[in-house]
Amino acid sequence: MTESVLPDTHRAMVESALPRVLVEVMQPRLTFDDIYDRHFDFVWRSLRHLGVAQSALDDLAQEVFLVVHRRLAEFEHRSTLKTWLFGIALGTARNHRRGMRRKGPPEALAESIASTAAGPLEHLVAHEALELVQQVLDTLKEDKREVFVMAELEQLSAPEIGEVLSIPLNTVYSRLRAARQEFEREIQRLGALP
Image 1 (spheres, one colour):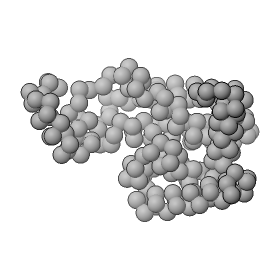
Image 2: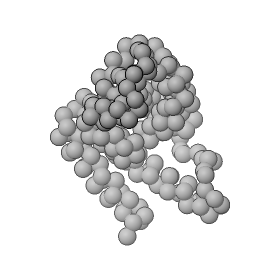
Image 3: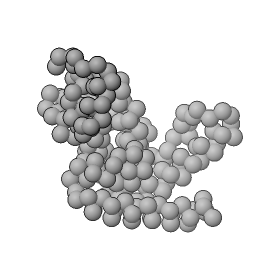
C-alpha cells in the first residue's frame, strides 16, 4: 500500500472517524516478524490464562505462531489482529486441554514464576495471588473461563469475544456475569476476600 499524502493531523482526524478495523487496513501490512515481536507476550499470557500448563507454554505459543505464519496471507482484517490471534490461541489451548484430559491432569503452577516485584515479600504476595487466580480459573467451566479470561484479563470487548467464540452478544454477557459471580464466590470460599 502506498504511503498516505495526508498531513499527520488530517490523517489522525480521518483515522479517529473510522472503525478500528479500517484503520488497521490503512496501516502498512505487518510482516510475520512484526506480529511475532509485538504480540508474543499477549499470546503466551492468553495461553497461560486459558489453562495451559507452564511446561507447555513455549511449545503452544510456537504452535500458535506456526498457524499465524501459515494463515497470515488469509487474514482479511474482518477482525482486529489481536482478536484473530486470540482465536488461534483459543483453538490451540482447547486442543491442548483435550489432549491433557486423555493424558491426565495438568501439572501444578511452577514455584519459580518470574516476578518484577521489588523484594521477597512482594514476590511472595504476587506469587500467592497468581496461584489463587489460577486455582480459581481452574474451577470455572471451559465456556465461562474463556469469556472471563478474554474480558477480565485480556480486556477484549464483548463484541470481540462474541466474534472469537462465534456466540451471540447476549450469551457473552450472560457467561461473563455467571463467571464473575463464580469467580467471586470461589475467592470468598477460599478466604481471600472478606
